[in-house]
Image 1 (cartoon, rainbow, N blue to C red):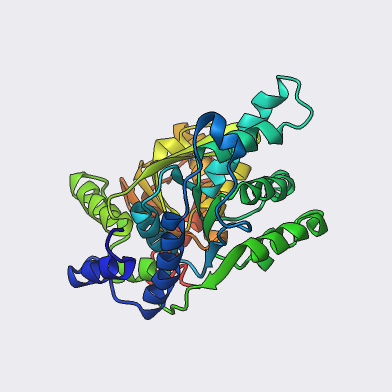
Image 2 (image 1 turned 120 degrees about the vertical axis):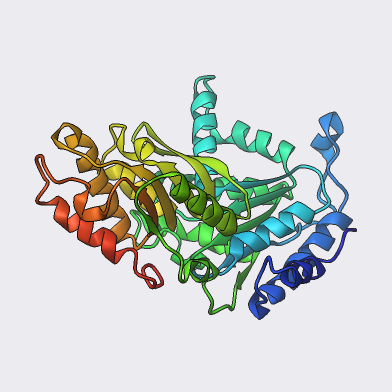
Length: 361
């Protein structure tokens, strides 16, 4: 077995890569115990023999549902656990991206004429993984709410161990959602099959990293680019993946995403025909967004300006932390053209969103 997770954590603290936190070290004890159980359990044989394999522990190993406020270090701890779990067939994935994969696979299964499109999808999934780590678990869509219960039942029955991070406890998932009473058995399932643990930390490390940092860069030149590159490396540890949000048949691409933080160019977000639903989905998926290369717009850029206003409104209402690089100061980004008067409110919001305590609550 490799080095104890707490020892790895302490080394990173000593190197100045992490700040010491008792709540995080306590959580690592739980993750270490889970890692030991996983590594002690025989792996499921592949191929024909795998069909007759039963988990070594009849009831399986309980997973972990790790929740807490934004910036508590949930994703960092899960990544540390996933990276050092010495087993085959493990996977870490953002929950939203995972559910999109499930929907696409079910769509393909339906074309084959099967009665139950979820069954072949779940069967293929349990063949591939023993450990499934979900980042940012949240349920906001009724279609997802109706699928996850049956899907997780099949995962647990097959002995797949699930570790998930979330900003809210299981009881608050899909809160106030349509037909939520149909979702309640899934909450009971999570509580039964997973240990629910809240990170007892009062520090928002993501917010702390931005204390005293500049978050609006004008002009958007090479200096701004280098500064944002440095901020991004500090916030993500140099890790990144693409996140694609599917909204009403459209795709919103976030080319760089990690642990609730995203980075995109103005053209990615406002140069395409996206609307309020797309920006609301984006605001719901991220807690910090970096938007680069916002241009100075004129009347010929009315559509881009309108989309930018809608984007900022969605981020403002969601209390999303924003870092921007722009050609000019907020008040001078759109001085002429339809809607330029209304843009003054957007400029004011941009100023407000640069305050040190923005998004802290």
